[in-house]
Length: 138
Image (tube, rainbow, N blue to C red; front, side):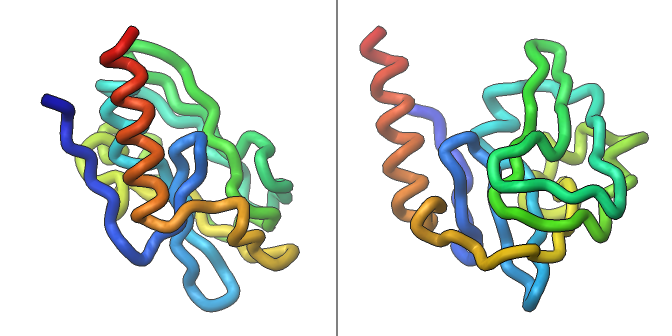
């Protein structure tokens, strides 16, 4: 029996398990429920700096858990206009509420979103189901 992972609608997803929520000319970025469950207990988040510019697939943040350290890659090219400073003292928000209070940063878009490089909820759900099946077969 495979584990259930929350994949809400209204978001776009990456193969590296980040999510993007479009908010007018900005996007909010975080990690998926799948990512936080694989990392387990998150103990530290290194946030980007406000004003920092990132290109698609560049490291936006770094997350450390009791299990591993993982980079969070930017799903879009943008300029960081807001960071979730609550994560500094409460990194566990990424585990508790990855799509809500556990967001990482808000980016102002520097170029149009390449939706063809992102997955909608159904595509992402199939993607993680495939990953889980491959894990079971190993």
